[in-house]
Image (cartoon, rainbow, N blue to C red):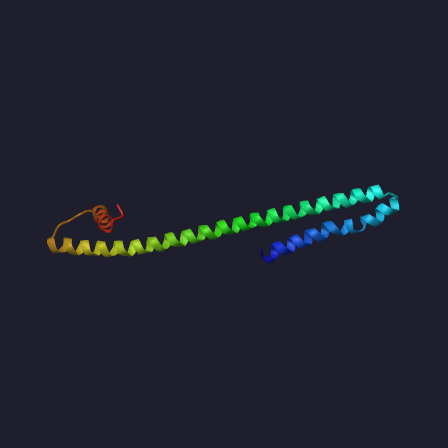
Length: 123
């Protein structure tokens, strides 16, 4: 869990629990154990729901970070493959131009690129 998320969760818990810390004294002043028991029950349920909500938000943040990291890794892998293919393709095109220069034949640029892709097995 990263620091900003943890600080946000701690601040949220402190802000919610601060008013409920004085509630038992208020309940006794109002004069009822029944109200105090109800307040304790509600406080327990509220705490569980808060924890569940915080865990859900942290999990969603983790999923977003993981998706971003995976997308970045896939993009880097694709860029590496593209760079490798480009260098191999350039070498094949240079070889083709050398052969064509020696024979005096002419082929369009698109034809040269297709032959280079065919030679590299990419077509």
